[in-house]
Length: 467
Image (spheres, rainbow, N blue to C red):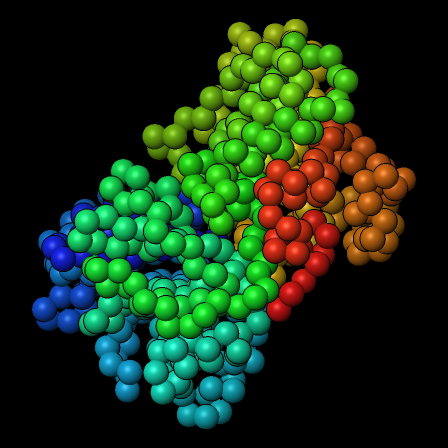
């Protein structure tokens, strides 16, 4: 998906910028970039991160990235930041965006005489397109409004200017944007997990469509927030780091609460509960408490050299990394009945491999409890890996096998008490060779998050869409 970090200070900013951006690495590791405002103008550095970590790539660049303000990004799409010189002045921009109508916008702009220079895998760089839409405005506020009005999908951004950093949250608030403050400095990120170690306290949560300008002394509002909000629920399920808070709601607390509530009506007798690292752990801890069963670490994640499994572009490489980074504790597994909790099932490939490993090491029964409902729809708003095709989803493959079409009777497959839903779940269970399989309900997930349903984007489960 991607994540960004920006900071502006009364002293040199590079240390906070470097580590603050690195704290977004769990949001994806395809490319990373930094830009600072120096006495000589904008200085930037961009590196491919697919085969290495952020820190190792950028440490040699830090001496040239001087100045008191800067922005950084971890991107799963295009090279960023983009540096621009226009009638608005010089600026750099980073985005977390998905533009579904990029081809139409590209054609419209080229018909008006606009040209594109930065390519990503042969295609127009989405961040450059955003910058060109900004340039059509008479000022930054008008230009960002133009972005909101023009694109189908979502776009959240940071803009580095000579006088400060402009932060803009997507018009429906698909991902959060959070300001932090410490003495003499301000920071902005959509992942506040890096704030505590850098000395920042959360100061303000931007609303959907809200624009603020940040200086070392504070911030001023440039555009009021919209009334309608649709923040991504999957942040609490999977993408969010456990210590992060969005809309004031802690990620791990939601996972814990969801696990507790799911265990309430589960009368299964097991020897212990375990979590699939990382995001399944919080769910499993809550489940163990709700179930009044011991929690044990049957899988340990080996992190020093293995990046996240969803990042590589080739499915075979993702599967290999997923297998290698999780080490089973075979002493705990032999002849045991175990409930495993995981965040979600997307393709099912990783889970099938994990289940096979568990049986190989002697597990007697493997029961899976999933923190969210079955994923039935690709995401049109954020660059999740699963969004490339609905047939990558195990649910849609099963539905096609049962119905002859992957989108037939979807309303019935969403209903947890329908025969279609129960048959789909059982087909998935059999395919993955699981003893029992249960998914959390959407109602329980929404209750665990604690926001009104209408303020959450739940499209990947129920197909609800707002553009």
